[in-house]
Amino acid sequence: VTQTVRELSADLCYAGNPLDRLAELRDDAAAIAALAADPTARCLVLVRDQVVLRESAGGLDPWFPVAVARPFGAERAFVLLGRDASGPCFGLLLEDAAAVVHEPADEGAMIDQRRMLLIKDPDLTLLDLRGIAVRKLLGRETVAILSQAKSLLHWHNRHGFCANCGAPTRLCAGGWRRDCEACRAQHFPRTDPVVIMLVTDGDRCLLGRQARFGKGMYSALAGFLEPGETVEDAVRREVREEAGIQVGRVTYLASQPWPFPSSLMIGCLGEALSTQIVLDQTELEDARWFSRAEAESMLAGTHAGGLGAPQPIAIAHHLLRYWVSITAA
Ligand SMILES: [Zn+2]
Image 1 (cartoon, rainbow, N blue to C red):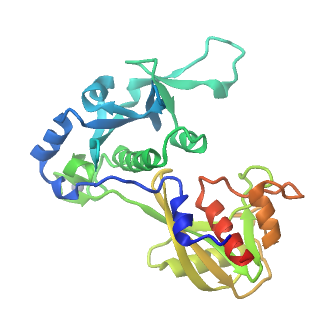
Image 2 (spheres, rainbow, N blue to C red):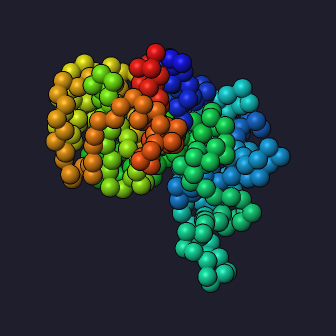
Image 3 (cartoon, rainbow, N blue to C red):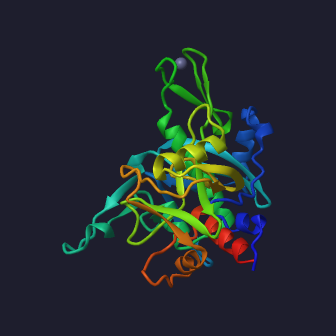
């Protein structure tokens, strides 16, 4: 069945954020304070890159009333995320000291069984966003709002000082700007664009693997867009650098927020103009052409050689699935 680009987009993890971001209120400190004091206001809480969750009747829940969340610990940043039908939504980053690494009492426990605990309420659960997404512990829209909160709060965590003069900066505009009072520079949250492209040659597609990938996993090539480049330039440069393949026509398909820490994955198809792979072994362990049938079996987990495709949380999975569907038609 041929998939549409719209269907591809509807399946992307970390996308689908439903909030009205209330940008028109960001410069109105009194309005933001009133939203935070609203009894329906709720808050996502992060500490040390972990999401704080509570058990509820419907499973884990990352939302806390603002009045409950703020006493959890000293606050590093408190930001206005927006509003949905239930009320205003905020994000709170606690100081690291609000959480501790929990060492299991069992001396024989594996080190990866350690987890973080919130000192003020050790019954709450702390999990990283990737694990929440992979295990589908929360709904798509909640994961998308968590992605917004995580990227924005991470930016605050790393921008306490002015890049222009080195003086401390101050959180402004509900968390959507930091101002330097020494030199008057204004700093805005950054998103880093990454191109990710499925390069095709008729009925074949180009996939590569980095040494750090799981065993047998191949994925679409990807790389950061550089200053002065268009998306098309970046697609062609990355594929030439990593695999020695010339790319002609580039088609944009869909994009995905990737909150590790704050990238935007720009998903494209690229048409190969050459077929001889010349591998950059500092970037890739291997790259090769795969037939449509082979790609289909990798997605299904039935590849005869045990090779596999990226997990569905990654846009690469959906680029491959989309290409398989349109070439099968
Ligand atoms: Zn400054």
